[in-house]
Length: 404
Ligand code: ASP
Ligand code: MG
Image: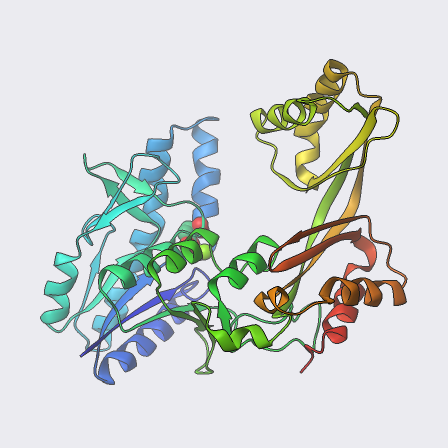
């Protein structure tokens, strides 16, 4: 009998009707002759409201207690889904992360999985039960409850699929799969049939967040093939897997955009060893997350260093930058919100030339001014004005022939 791991996210189990819908789908999967392990998230909004609740009793709650609190969200869903399945006459059992044998390190609120001993899962599967596992949680070897970081149910599903050597892992969510661009931005975006782990990670880091990135990294490391598909219909989704030779034939797999970015420039930075280190160490110490970084060629002993960050980070960054600019003797700091990042992603870039030229051509024809450029082996990203970013995405999507 094949083992199938299915994960249902918060929206998919967001109310009693939806939990019953999931129960029906899960039961059908079992009735088709499979052993089924289901991983569920907390019902949509629950984790956020638990976080809010914690802040109402204490401004800086301890991370250990946060984990005890947050793990209850998923624990609610596993019990409700088991009940719904039992209501359909199915044999079902719910297990917390700890009961499922998920052992993590002790880094509360963002623990890493050490190992999984799915003995109980196997016993219940062999006894004919559908096994429902709480996502996003585990326990330390000392028995403390831990959680795996926001979106961590994806990681639970992928890791369980690896540990159980599952025949199939399905990430069931509120979209039909991974698209060539966000369909709300580009209406003729197409669902991608197959995408490599690397492309999926680049798309996620460029703003197309379908899954938690850590879970895709884990899948890549342990070679877990999985499918992202809808919880609400039976359409085939997107297969995410290791790269195969034919995958390079497609030059660009997708376009993604990330809004709400800001550009910061430290002007007149003395061209001396160690200045960049000083700037970015100061930002790191203040927990400011930096994205694209560009340094201009030195001119009369000075350079300009620019970087982008989320617009919400500006408040944190401002005092830090002022202090560090004084310290290194820079001329000043300017910041502009209202920029966005547009990225084209595809492993085909490694073997096709002229991708950057084509992107810049399309943008030039549309009159979009490029403010910054950054590249990786499989991605070209540009920073543009935010107010026309959707139109730019449409133009680039069409320019690379991605439209349906
Ligand atoms: N409930 C957790 C969160 O909202 C984990 C998850 O949904 O995957 O981040
Ligand atoms: Mg979620």
